[in-house]
Amino acid sequence: MKIALVDSGIGLLAAAAAIRRLRPDADLVVSCDPDGMPWGPRTPEDITDHALACARAALAHGPDALVVACNTASVHALDRLRAEFEPDLPVIGTVPAIKPAAANGGVVAIWATPRTTGSAYQRGLIAEFGGAAEVHEVACPGLAEAVEHADEAAIAEAVASAAARTPVGTTDLVLGCTHYELVDDRIAAAVASPARLHGSADAVAAQALRRLGPAGAGAGTLTVLHSGRPASLQVAALRYPQGEVLTGVRV
Image 1 (cartoon, rainbow, N blue to C red):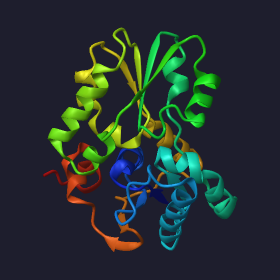
Image 2 (spheres, rainbow, N blue to C red; image 1 turned 90 degrees about the vertical axis):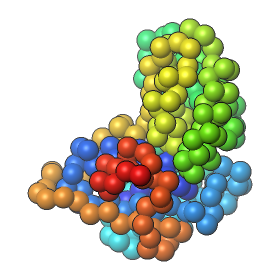
Image 3 (tube, rainbow, N blue to C red; image 1 turned 135 degrees about the vertical axis):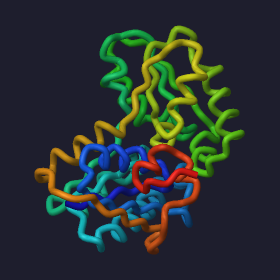
Image 4 (cartoon, one colour; image 1 turned 45 degrees about the horizontal axis):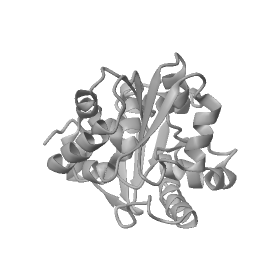
């Protein structure tokens, strides 16, 4: 069984590691785009083109499913990816975990990139799944970029800024960008309230595996593509526990 994951950068580590924990036998193809990142400031058409290029490069390796492990790409490119590859290849997108975060009411904060915060897409999810919860959108400028480069000082600054703008009394916090799941411990420590954090990686992994066959034997392989080229995981990826899950290496 082989699963491909697409993202602009190392945000895909969260879903890839979740899949590896659930299915150590799965072969993984991680296809990111260091030449074209960040995708967030690009036009929807440009984001779609870059996501398609990464997906096509991954498909040359014969995956059984494709995970779009990126909120931005899921917003803008998921329909095009499904139109091109399904039904032959299942395509699984990433959706912010607003529904489970809001299930019990309470105060919900959604941390997301500035482009996603306030977008029609996110407002639509809030309207559909927010229920009786009091929902607040919190933009996190620079956080995804800081995580991508494992810049500890920049991560601390961006997390502190977002935490200061998160309402006191927040009960649930949605990690609305896959990069944020790599620093969920720092986010949890920075928020004034002891909020429950909700990422997407575990749900995405479970959805991908539901579409595939039973577990096999042995250890799965890891194939890395950078803008279509064979590569190794970025050094920054090895600074996070999820990178260690995939490679056994931590720097």
